[in-house]
Image 1 (cartoon, rainbow, N blue to C red):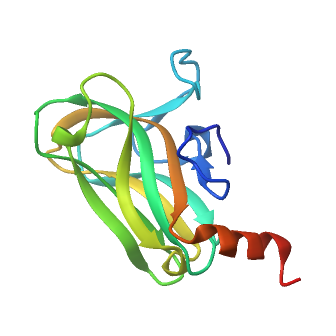
Image 2: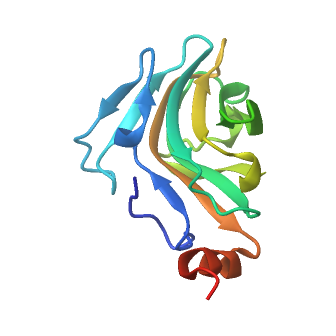
Length: 169
């Protein structure tokens, strides 16, 4: 599941590439874009409400750690502002969403791919979980292009990460 990322990533960051996603509806995986470092992306036409993309990360998060979610995206804008799409974390175990956020097209770059911060969540509340991207009805964009997803630990992650890797020695 891991892809190369930028300098902001920490060792325990979970990286998801487009080919790891479960695609629904009209989502299309493109694997030959030489302009991207990752060489693949998902093109998602935004026409109706639908949970269109998901990445399962199970229980791979460190317990008691806060995580920040971000995505590498670009979009074809129809309007300069307005709801473009929704992202979230859904826990199949608790049937709750520790993270849910609507993204406004005014936050999207007009000049290509950008890393977009999507918010943070408690990893303990994301058991047997999915990161998802959903189309919304009357979206302010016509297409969304997704090149990567990251879930990275924030705060006091290093001690707990070390304990998880080395056990209680």
